[in-house]
Structure formats: structure tokens, C-alpha cells
Length: 182
Length: 334
Image (tube, rainbow over all chains, first blue to last red; front, top):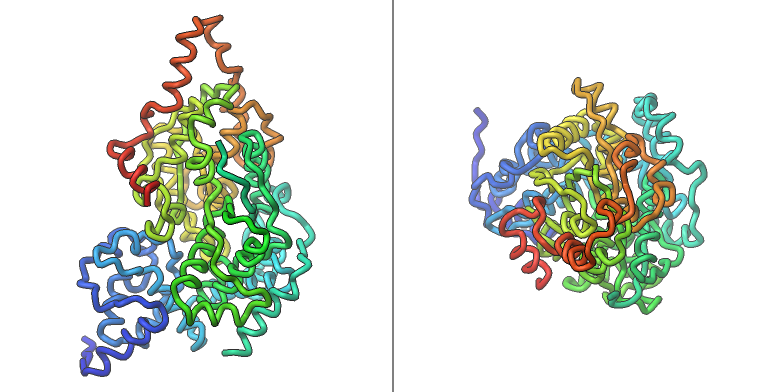
């Protein structure tokens, strides 16, 4: 069994970091498990969301940021809706993703590839071009046939040219300024 | 009956896989007398990929659009898409409540956002500003074969403080709008369960399992169609229904309609005008029996007819759970 040595620093540093990132006070969590009970994704998680909350309280930064759970959470807001301590749990999960992104810890490669295909499309056109996202995802992920079975069906729903907006340079500038600031 | 005009933000999905949602929303809002002004040169709200990466980036991508609406001098932005709505609400809340966040967001923008725009889902506009009675007054057609499960998805009414609309656990707005059109609305317990959202591409196995659960519960409640207000829910349930059947050994064939399409049919519009031909699982068999309102009983007494239409509009239908009345009006006040 893993032993965790709790000192003042371990106990406070990570929780403080989360508070600075999200504004949420995770010390209010008393481990009732309501978030986990309602979480539709818990069967897919490596750690249930209530355990992630406990990891924050006990300073287990590595474990939380390297978990798959933070990437598999879809921000469905069930946990935030039901938390008796009124912690925005989904926002805490989002904050963990933000930190993991900055530190380039990606434990779910395909999800990251999909997000980046989405943001690339956004940067190029100002709006999302669905066909381009799936093509880029399939190439970068190596899963070349993802949703190929939907091909004939989805044809009547897709448009085949990007909807480029006049302000696409404004949008590209938002992303550029953000990247430079990092 | 309409408070004023709205800035309209369709969102990227509604230009692509969800174009039928856009078409049907425009058709019914016009019929209900609302004015939609296009948000000029709108850009993507950022959605899940942006907020997963960074809250300030997400805030700026959403706020670019809010700043455009602010300059249109229209106080309310409406979008049919819950994901765009959530992006706008979160950006607005943080910009107006947190000065440091607001400064960081505005440093990324060419045109700063000052915090003067309220975002509402188009469902909320129709339910609260137009109202079920006005909807009933536009009904010309009955849909006797529809047995609807209203599926709201996760974020239309949640988290409650941010959404400030309907009930977070048992939303009733769609149930009541459909009941106002005389549709048989079923009790459905999975109203707000998640369908798998944007994970359809990178984590399909997860989405197929979650979607299978939703469709199973739809069948259990005796419904023969699902009525939705979210392009992602529609896509996961309709486009992926054959994938669900293959992966889970099921044999669902359940049409997935936008609430705006059901209202449009009840107002007498043709399926093609509402984009129903774009959907994968056909609703043809369920809507074939539609007929002019009142045609079912040959010349009923006028008094009785009037009473019947009022009952359709306001009385609790089976879809309204006990206590829903109180919670919905509480949500409206908040």
C-alpha cells in the first residue's frame, strides 16, 4: 500500500493552486460521494471524481494530473448540480485539465488529438469545419477509419467547404496572443 | 407577446450536421412573431476544446461574439445550442464578476467586452418570453401518433445558478411546449443524463454505451420518439443509432426530433421546411397521420372546442412530474 506523508505543504499547496485556477475551495468537500454517485462517466474513470477531490485535499498533485479521469470528464455538470457543499466540481475538473494542458500531461491521447483538430479548424476559418476536424483527427490519431461507416449517411448533413468568416484573422490573433503570453 | 428582438447566434453545428435545427428555429420564431438579428460575422464559441485548454482563452473566444452583440445594441443574445450557451454564460459571469479575468480576456480581444449582454437559449425564449399559450394559439395541426420523451441533455438547465432556467433535475419547458401543441408527452427519467457529448469521435465506445442507456429508457417509458434541444444529443442519438445497435446488439429505430420541428409541424409547416429529411432515422411513419386541428370531430360545438384547446395548453400532461410546477416557476423567478 502506498503511504502518503501529510505535511502542511502537501496539504495546502495543491488545493491553493486549484483555488487560484478555478476560485473553488476544495477544502469544503467532506467526501459524501454524491458527485461520484451521479457521474455518468465514473464507469470509465480510473479514479472516481470524489477521489480526485480527495487527492487535491491531500496534495497528490502527480496522481490527479496524470489521471485519465480528468480527460474523460465531459463537464455534464451533474456533480456541480448535486454537491451539498456547493463546490463547482466540474469546474475543478476543468481546472485540472487546464494545468495538465500547460504541463503537457496528456493521458488520453485521442481526446487531445480531437481537441487540437477542433482548435486548428477554429484558428483557420473562425468557425468549425466538421469535415476537416474528422479528417485531421483520423490522420493524426492513426485511426484512419473513424466514423467511415457514417460516410454515406452523414453526407446529406455536412457542408463541403469551410464557412470562412471575415474576422478569421481576429480569431487567429486571439489564439496567437494567448500562445505568446504562455 | 414577444419582449423584443434578439441577436441570433446559430453556432457552427447549426451550419453543418444540425442545419435542420437552424431551419426549424427560424421558421417557428418567425411564425411566433419574434425578430432575429444575425450576429454579424460571428465566430466559434470555443466549446469544450477551448475550456479544457484554458479558461481565459475560452472566455475570449466566447466574448468576441458578446462584444459584437453589445455593439448591435441588442441586450439579449439567443442561441439554440446549449454548448454555445454555456460558453457565453460562463464568459459573461467571469468577465462581470472577476476584474483580473476580465482584463486578461480583453487583452486577447481587438474589441473589448464590457459585460452588457444576456444570453438565453432559444428554448428559454420560446418558453418564457413567448409562452405555451401563444404557442397553442398557432397550432393548426395535430400529431396523434407522437409519443414523445423530452430529452434535455446535461447543460440546458445546469449548473442551476449559471443556467438560471427551468429545473436542474426535472426540467419541464419542452414537455409543456409540446403539451401546448397537444402532443402526448411521456414521463421520462433520463431527461438530463449525459449522451457522451463531444466524445463521439475520440471515445466512441463510451458514447455508444451512454446513448444505449438513454435509448433504452426512452423505450421503457413508452415513447416512440425523442425530442431534443441540443445538436450534440441529436447527433449522438440519431446519427450514431446504427452504431449503438451494432455495438450493443440492440435494434432501436427511434426518430430524434428537435422540439422546434415538432412545434413547426403543429403550426402546419411541411417536414422539408423543417429539415426533417436531413435526419437519419426517419420520422415519416409517426407524422404521416397528422391532420388539421379540429378535423377529428366533425363540427364540434364551438364552446367545447375552445375548452379543449385551453386544456391542451395549460393542464398538467402526464409528462409533468409532481412538484414540477413549483420548481419551474421558482427557476423562472430566479
